[in-house]
Length: 64
Image (tube, rainbow, N blue to C red; front, side, top):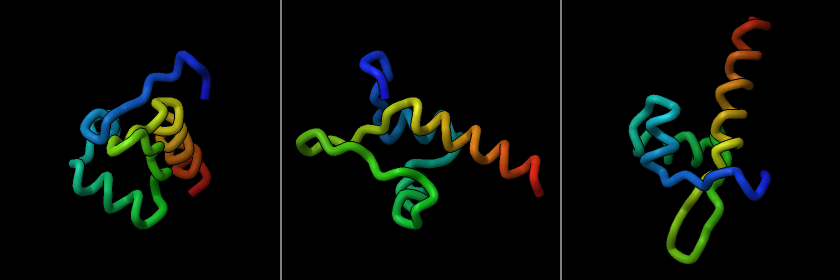
């Protein structure tokens, strides 16, 4: 993560992944998505981690 890597709220991460927020949290609980960074009471994901999940899914699709 770099200093220019924006931190995303759950709604923003879910939007990028085209899933609902409850599905986002379900995937986090199942270990399919990384756990968020906790900043006080806030949960945030580095945008690069969400984009890495998409790239990893694309790579896995190519090998199946």
